[in-house]
Amino acid sequence: MNIKKHIPNLITLLNLFSGCIALVFAFNQDFEMAFYFVCLGIFLDFFDGFFARLFQVSSPLGLQLDSLADMVTSGVVPGLVMFQMMISHSSPLVAGHLQIFPYLGFIIALGSCYRLANFNIDTRQTDSFIGLPTPANALFILSLPLVLKYAESLFVIELLTNQWFLLVITLLSAYMLNAEIPLFSLKIKKFSFKENAIQIVFLILSLLLLIFFQYLGIPLLILLYVLLSVINNKVLKN
Image 1 (spheres, rainbow, N blue to C red):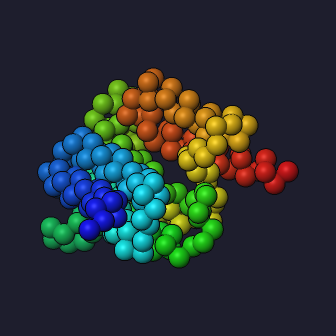
Image 2: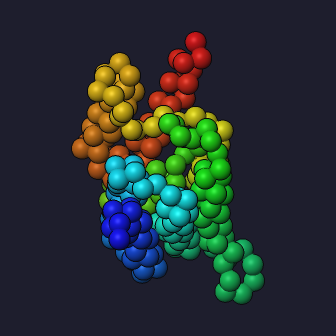
């Protein structure tokens, strides 16, 4: 029995397990623990592919498992978190006790599902990404309630408690997941500063953002990732 071939799939299932635990915390509005378990899931998501390549045991089954696990950890969880944020800061749009508005937060889950399915059949995304990867989007969304929790700025608090702003974030999130925008990969394949300049600059700036802004640094570094990718695309074209 070849144990090595099962290791990547086991790591993928642990990613899914982390996502399921994050869902429980998100249901209970414990967004900090939900964030940490999503981070653990994303960490495991990186290493399942790493070990699959290391042991040369990549398989169609592993590809499907990876997408299904990501759908929970990086798709359903951020959708639920946005639902919870909206339900806390929205007013009923119809008669009775039903609040329609918060359910729009699950548009994030729909956008994530479409992206993951498309990623599996898109041959252009082997060395880079087209559209925002679901883990990056999940970190962006899950950081928002933590930014709100520790915010000292009245402007930030007003933004993140405004139902229309949250809807804009939701729609923008679903769009960016599937936008035809090339984004650079963080994988460093050769030890050359010239070939990995943008990755190294991004990692240094990300570290500085996290040190100085803490949770607020997370959405800022995701925005930085998109901005640097757009600038890099312009430079390559010229």
